[in-house]
Image 1 (tube, rainbow, N blue to C red):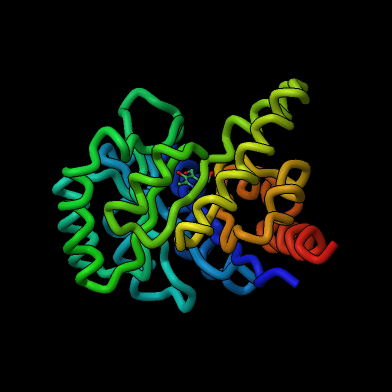
Image 2 (cartoon, rainbow, N blue to C red; image 1 turned 90 degrees about the horizontal axis):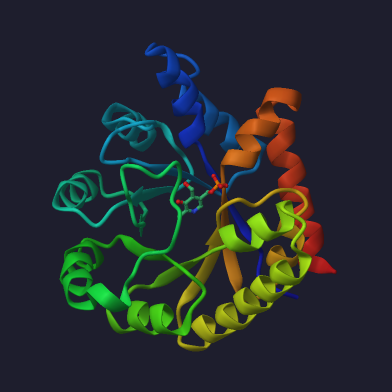
Length: 248
Ligand code: PXP
């Protein structure tokens, strides 16, 4: 039997809706508490440079109230480095960030920035934070993440999910095969393997079935589904699909 698979619920888009009106509702911290009660093993939040969804006060509130670990997504900038060291969340996940993008579009280019990133993560590791890097399922990026001392890689599932949504099933299957091979390779190197981006009830089963993957981070689909059936049932259904996919 594979190890249990953790579910990290990304609450960024509760903050997106709140910020559309500039007020205080819906409250992402309330969403995080509900997610905990519904079976989330962790909460993920991305403090973007432009603060378009999660705010500094949200991170403070999450650190003060959460019972499950916070996975703090951030760009590799000096500002975020200082914030991570100030709050000391359970984990940080380095993601690429561009102002003009609607969401995190690709993985981080670790191989190209190896030296800088090695110096960037060293104090975070020394402070006891679990360091993860969000990368494409690619040997070069995995090997670079391993060389610089990252404990975790999160494999980007966006291309796989897009191909499924657009009915490009050959591309989808090729992406899935690549993710499976790269999860096995990263695991062999001793990295903990996570995955996420764009996952839905339809796309999660084969990813959840990969024994090397220990955590999935899922946000946009769950927050959308919550509009129709409520956050708690939406999360419970995801949890149950993940668990079933893991055991078959
Ligand atoms: N993992 C990482 C590193 C991300 O940047 C995101 C998107 O913020 C997710 C997972 C979740 O993706 P989605 O919101 O599409 O489920």
